[in-house]
Image (cartoon, rainbow, N blue to C red; front, side):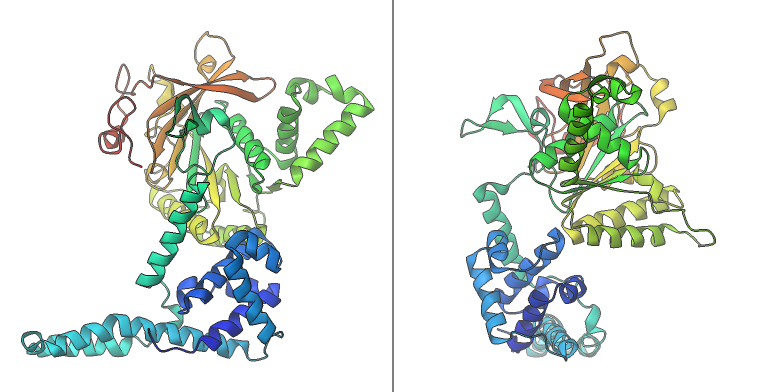
Amino acid sequence: MVPHDPVHEAVVIGACALDRQIRDVYVVKLYADHFLAREHADAWGALIELKRRGLDYDPATVESIAGEKVARTIESIIESRPEVPNNLAYHVDQLMWDRVKASVIQGPHQAFLEVLKDPVASADRSKVRSLARQLASAFDGYEERQWIHDPKQLVHEQMREIEKRVDGHAAYPYGIEGLDYFSDQRDEDGEPARRMIPGAAPGQITCISAVSGGGKSTVTANIALGLARLGRRVLWGAWEMKGGMNLELLACISLGWSRADLIKGKGPIRSHEGRVELEERMHALSEYVTFMKNPFRRRIGEKPSNERNLDLLHGILSDAACDVFIADLWKRCLHVDQPSEEEEALIRQQMMAEDLGQHHILLQQQRLKDIEQRPDKRPTREGTKGSSAWVEVPDTYIGVHWPALWKNVPRNKIEVLILKQRYGEWPLAIEFDWQPDYGRLDGGVSIAYQRPGEGSEIDSFSAAGAFLGQKGGKKGRR
């Protein structure tokens, strides 16, 4: 065990449990890896989760999210230190110094000693001097040294993640049964087999893509409703269709009302009772789904940039205490959308999702001219507007296809195409019953997925399927 003073860790944990403002400052500065005492690392992880969920501290809440042992640890710390010390910054600095000493002992110091003990290796003077310089420089800038995992802590955290899966938290549904589960397959327990693995998991990204008017907003609205039913809090970046209209759409789908009637002022809202019912439903939905206006390009005279916009978005998401963020359309947060700039921005968005423990759903359009020129009108990954990062960065890629938009067929079917799952099977195709005027998706049955190269152009990314797996062929990577 690396020598350290656990008192500093306890002081920081106690102060951050007692004072929410202090907690908000330090949970973004310190990671569980900074805490060398295992019980303190677990306690800090619980405080990070309180921040992410926007919850105040109390023992019962901590016990519900992290277990009785962690709750007892924090309570014991508070009992011995019931007030926030005036010199908290000192304890934070000492905690970080202990962490860098541990990193040096386990890293460059160990490597230096191993070379000195080896007669052959130590004969190379340049190598010895180089390691000595690394040993000295390892103590510089220690405040920023937080990116290399402590091996033991990494194993501990990963085992906790595995235990969650064993306890039934292996997947995070989108809230649409026909999307989340196969209707015609069962697992070893006789339950419907999961189609989406892991689904809308914290720290991951889903891309939903279609042509304009192709149904992506409808599918996204059904996902938002499904997530709300599951008790997950959603922040919807309503940057294309305004927040009020999106909320009206959710309420309309939830109540089973005609959207056309609602827009025309007809149907149930002609009566006072109908308007009261609609208002109450929107209030109920607002407890789980909140909306964000587009904050970009609003100030005269400022010098916008992708970095500034993403910094602003990161701050808003940090304060939102949401489980899922929907960006419709995400590219509206960009000032420059050149492929290289867009790729950097998408990677930054991925880091946001990971750091904040949120699932991000990004909506993006397909290239209309590309689809118009080919016989197969279904979305492809290659057809996504923008850089190839739209395929590389998201963990899940969903295409939405409304056949009636392109040919004379009944308007009551919509297809959802799973074009990428980093940990699950793809490609897959699901056909839903759809009532366009009501926006509701029902059913959800598997249909044959015809590759874009079979009778139409070849998706240049589809070669990855040979490695990651095909439906009806090799099993997908899990």
